[in-house]
Image 1 (tube, rainbow, N blue to C red):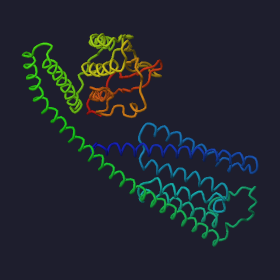
Image 2 (tube, one colour):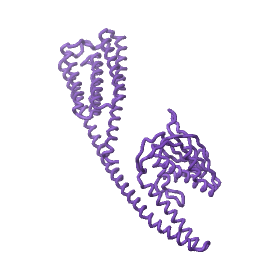
Image 3 (cartoon, rainbow, N blue to C red):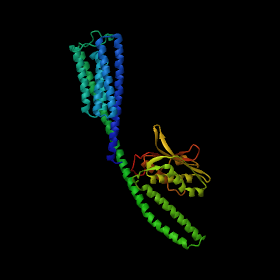
Image 4 (tube, one colour):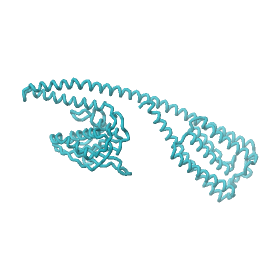
Length: 449
């Protein structure tokens, strides 16, 4: 993956993280709404002044209405920093309403502005976004101080606090409290923003290093694949010449002689080398685009099983097909190749006198059919822990004459179709290969995994 290709992925991650943050802010607003409802009940019982009850009720309805509307909007669109900023301001205003109704500058709830300053510094990306939140907090503190000293609004301290005349008429107390809280808000916002920037710097540096490593490995992988493809191609031509010479020599050898036996072994080994080279060429060749047609996998599976009747008969293995119609859009040539690889593996894993079963049917999810499912089960020994640890590793094989490429190619074909391939132990014994394919591929191009 290139750096340019990774940028949209990182942007998507940032957008999803912002959306999660906004949804959490909504949850906190609902908590504040619950506290307002609790305060409404308390005032109704112990300080039932009509205008106070109306104040709390209006603030509660406003907060609930804004929260519901914003929540529905954010579920439809991706929120940005402005949305986070506005939501923090709404929460600060709701907290200010609770502060006012519980005493203003004398309220024990006045320090609730400090967590809001910390949240602004931590959640917003720039100081330009943070300063309006801090300015709003400062403005509210100044308003509460002036309101207390000059009687700008009615005194709302609840009677059950028993504050008496209170301290609201003492300028030194009022401005000291407002100044200390303003200083703490600024420190909270700056510290949390500094910590955020430091953590972001470390994360970006780590991502840059990781991306550089990934790009280097990707380039190295492409170079190795190109070299392997070139090597396989260069070896194929002389191997074909050697095979032709061996066939010419075999024509002049006396049947049943030592020379005839040796030439037969040579031709067999040459053919095996050709199969290994062709497997590597298939593996290192980038997957071409899909030629999609509507295919009944039941017919395709029966065709593949018929193709292996001779091999199964020589090994004394019974083949069986359990299939029902399963129509999907796929590239039949590639799916046929993947299924051939799976059936050949099953025939090689099953013992003489054993059985290989190919099952085909719709692949259903909780919402209904969504594709097709192919299973190839053998009656062999199943997967040992050593084999399970190296599944789908290129070149790994337990067969004396295997190349370790067939399963890798089959999985690459499945992935190109937007499907999956997995190997597991069958419940009744033996190995089980499960190929799941969607009704229509979501991916049409790719490279071998």
